[in-house]
Image (cartoon, rainbow, N blue to C red; front, top):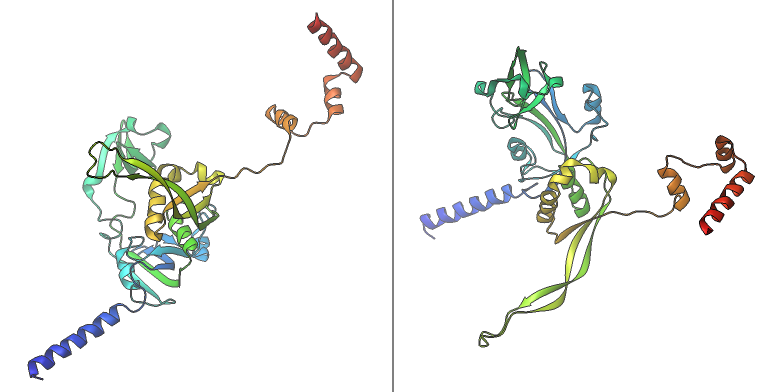
Amino acid sequence: MSEEQEADVADDEEQTDVEDETTEGLQRGDFVRLDYTARTVEDGNIVDTTDPEVAEEEGLDEEEREFEPRVIVLGEGHIFESVEEAIIGEEIGHSGSTTIPAEEAFGEYDADEVKTVSANKIPEDERYPGAHVDVDGQHGHVETIIGGRARVDFNHPLAGEDIEYDYEIVGEVDDRVEQAQGLISMYIDADLDMWIQTDEVEEETVVEPDEDDEDAEPETETETVEKETLYIESTPQLAMNQQWMFQKQQIAQNVMDQLDLDRVIVQETIEGGGMGPMGGMMGGMGGGDVDLEEALEDADMDEEEIVEELEGDAETTEE
């Protein structure tokens, strides 16, 4: 073997070693459970966290959301790119810290985004410094109001801030239902029952006519196909969630794409039981459980008077 051939072999072996190293550990497309806390570098102000202890210390509203490790898909933009790069190739249990520059986080501060607008464009109860407002399709916060003019900053509140991101890779998520729950929780905070099953579904397909028969028209035939389906049990909270109402098609499509599902079915279950027709009627009238004797006392009537009145009505009707 010549020196040139030996050099080529050595290069190939080195390239193979590099490829082996890059495929070790977590890779793009993996579902992982991530624990993290993000703060501004300059002031240490909390930006976001999954840690309930940190949330309590910072006075974050624990009724608005549940603080627990978040399920993400690496390579899908669910977290900042700098954090993804730090995680890829690592193993479960790895923890670390990385700084996210302002331009990658919430953007650089742009002085041109501070504008003077008519105060009439701002609802009267929001005309005060610090109020978050929507003006001409832009979201911002009021800096000052003088006379009929308002100074509004349309930059993101964290624009220009570098972010310190502390994280720990808690685990990898292999269960597809947990993966679906994690994907949906990125959009809405709701505790939902869901499951995946394969259904047999009848579908009509178009059968093209024979090319030689010019007058023939396409026909349809029914065939049974299998569809892998994610079922989601709806709740009143889900039905009333605005983000779900406006984005459910996008959310469902994302879940189907990520988990290679054929469809998503959201179903509502209404249980039987409870009051009968009279109970429902009384409930509709504003009553709950009504005691007949108490009702008679309240009406200052006795049973004989009711019977006499009913008999009188009956006679009148018959006539």
